[in-house]
Amino acid sequence: MTHTSAGEAADFARKLPKAELHLHVEGSLEPEMMFELARRNGVTLPYASVEDVRRAYVFSDLQSFLDIYYAGCRVLMKEQDFYDLTWAYLTRAAAQGVRHAEIFFDAQTHTDRGVAFETVVSGIYRALEDGRTRLSITSGLILCFLRHLKFKDVYHRAREAGLLAVAHAGEEGPPEYVWEALDVLKVRRIDHGVRCVEDERLVGRLVEEQIPLTVCPLSNVKLRVFPNLKSHNLKQLLDCSLLVTVNSDDPAYFGGYVADNLQASAAALDLSREQQLQLARNSFVASFLSDESKRAYLQELDRFAAQASLKTIS
Image (cartoon, rainbow, N blue to C red; front, side, top):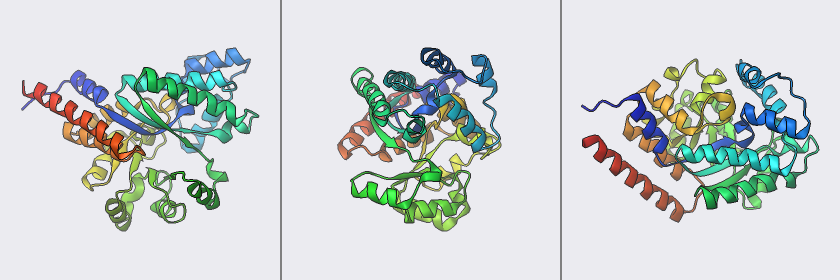
């Protein structure tokens, strides 16, 4: 039997090729950058220091997180701010084995403050293009609608325009929210979805149709969906043959990027390397990449798995 040290486990999780499918780019705003942009744009923050910000990252529920999240977003005003934010995420993601990222951006959070939509998109897009050429990370953008402003008509119009639909459901809300996302909004992917296990018929449908779940373990613990990682149902979801993936959600606020989520979950739930490889495979299968691009990434993952196996044997 081979013993894997904590350092080796962390190295495996970090180097494992993977896609990230549930990442709010505004949620990657680290406190240091928050203060840097506040100075640059003359914005007064309700915190005296970076340490004060980090101390505020104790949340009782989703709303308590959102209050701080929106306060931080106020520093994002110019195209360069959105570029710097996105580029900082991409450099961290590259160091954590991310090969492809499908990134949420919350346009309404900014347009409500008078920031032009073009300013937001142009800054993010420039960074994604640089990520493609300089970091070899492919990417896609997912436009968010704030939940209290979301209507099925918007999703219908988006589908008619050829856009793919996803929705947050089954996190704090019950399985019924997942049913609504599938049947009313006609989504192709469920973000979170961890409460699906409360409904056997829903689990059966998700398995049969291979609807992906973009699970965010550290986020779930921070927002009290689970009391701790040992209580998380990620392993149960895998055992049910669900197309489950691991992601970071809002990593600056929830304590870790995607490899950190994978490593912490593997340690808490005793996930095998094969289960971690399965999660990585799922991330590419669940992506909106072309079949050709998926095959290329899955082949890279197979090569990584073979090399990792050889190192374990030796």
